[in-house]
Image (cartoon, rainbow, N blue to C red; front, side):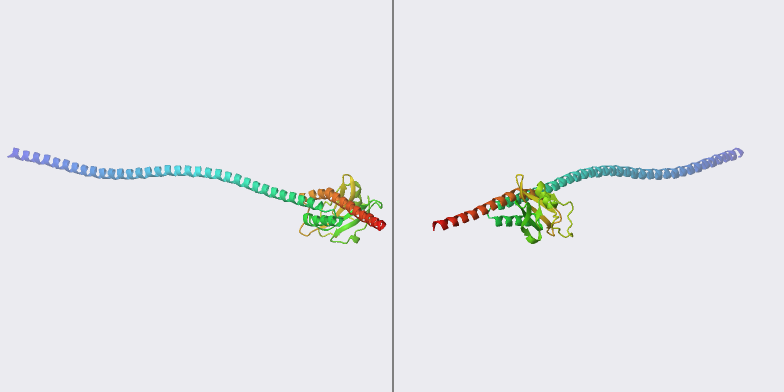
Length: 277
């Protein structure tokens, strides 16, 4: 009986130990399951972070590529703008050159017309009128005159004027003042600064051009005032002055000789008619 109780006590003790061990195993298993759940959650978290990081890295690469493309496009844009500016500059140069050529052609045409008109007639009064019209229309003068040299008196006298009366311009001795010196030296005179408000001084023109046949001076053209819309002389004006200095002088001299010869011929013919009657 005593042995049986001891055995039963031993069995209960081992069963108790087993139950305690089982409980500890169960608790350990529960702890492991909890830890495993934590680890799984951590893994999912890490996977999400990895995916986000991967996406961010991919976006960064795409962004870098986009930046490179933008940079290339900016360079192309700069190159195109540079070429556009060059073409635009060339176009402006061509346009400016075209305007200059057009102006030169007009100037040459005006010079040709002026030269043709000067030699289109042998009538002395018509030649003087043509010179006046050239100075008005092509040079743009408002007040001016043509003075011719009286060889015997050695003085210049007004033969045709515009804007003023011939009688207002006094005779000028060769060598006296601006007009007289131009008639003596044959050198053209131009005022440095044109003052539109200043009253015209008949002995101090703003321009004085000698009328020359080779070195022989037959008179001068004096300009006292320009038209209101003209404030200065341009290149073509000086070319016209040069043309007038030579061609106008030749036209005046030729027409004057022709008129005198016609007058003499008429006188001689009248005298012959009287003798033959």
